[in-house]
Length: 433
View 1: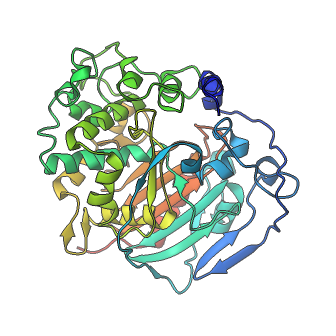
View 2 (view 1 turned 30 degrees about the vertical axis):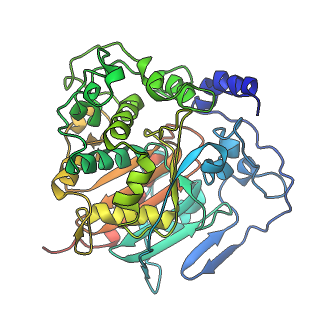
């Protein structure tokens, strides 16, 4: 693609990011695939999913995405499962894979449907028939209980995470503190990124970037004309990337720690700090400190900007079972067997409500780049737009990975995913200490 074409894409990105875009699904040229369900080694694959008339062409195939259209809902079945083939990315290398056990029989899971979506009690199969899920995996400890793929997706594909990546960034910040690369999270960002010296983000302590309470003005509403659209344009191909991506946000409306407001730029600043502090790529650091220790079975990837900087507010990609391995690490207090991979104290700080649900106004509380359940029972969730999530309940050693192709960035049906999670929790008892 020419540079002028890339520039046109950058100009068009606000429209691509707008919530509720409903472009008609184009026809695909590939041969037809029957909508059948197949099973292999306890995994269930389905060639179809709900609303096939929107997501697939008349022959049942999903249109292939490219740099111009990957965000559009009609192309998302393809793009959300191979984003690192469309956008430049660094590889996160795996090590020696750890094994999963499998439940002999898939458990019977039911959930209570929220009243705004009809109410009643439904099964897991009914949930999958009502929601555009591409992958779903439920595990307790080292045992996979459920593993499903829909819309022709497979267990070999890397699914993108969107803002789930923010929690991974926070995890790495904690490891950099443990390694001595970052002296203190009370340091301002400019200590590690001198080019930010004198800017509002440069003056902000890392602690308040971790909790989204910098006080720097940033609007993230997914309407195509907001600050997150400007950030996306700067970090996509054709954008400046790097320091320039965050320097455009320099208006302070509150002192650090006084106000909470969700802002992807805060995580991007953390990524710049992390990269400068460790002196190498974030992907390499993640591989060494997390991906290999958890026994990931596949390489992961992280999309990078024009400068080669990982876009830390989004776009991490992995297979479902490796997301589950990451969730198991978090559920087990940062341990893999006898090895403490992530300092327990850091993980505890990450996953407690540093900001209360009352202050966020979003039902969840907020830790270090992590959403905390309001009952404060130790459970938490990594959330990404369009239906991506990783739920973790340490008290049950329970993990649920959910990838999807919801059409809107703020689809109200995420409430049904939360209801499913409650049903999953009810199916498995808490451990006795």
